[in-house]
Length: 209
Image (cartoon, rainbow, N blue to C red):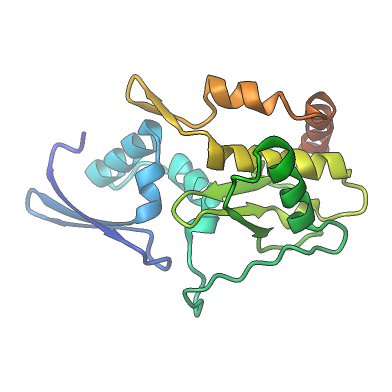
């Protein structure tokens, strides 16, 4: 896709997620291992960037934003810091209850609140994320509010637990994480309809803010 020979090195460097060096017809690319999970559209954007160095990269930026759980923070040791108890919602209690009710206690992922300001509006639509390499679920702290119903927090946690339980698929060289099986299981959540309706209202408020 780049028209050049590419030497690829995968790293765990959270300070430099993607770096490109060109010498003649050889391109040396160093990228964070999170990009192993990127779909074909992100890969094509990366190839265009390598080829021209001028194209915009909205898909790459969105992918990085949605996979923050895969990044080590500066000064972080090998034992990740996980905070489950929020001001209004305890993720550990919610996770354990859902694990027993829907998964027979088989989900081994860790769960915690993500970093950020809980008072900030939902500027992006990533309310939760799951990183398969670290087996960690992170929930956006913007949801740790009194006016966020417990059933909606449970729905977001359940959604991310499904990512841990359901294998992704590749169709026509495209990566799919929300497979037909995933969607089928997602609808089994007891408050699915109510949670989806509440999420739509949340996003509408965010768009108008």
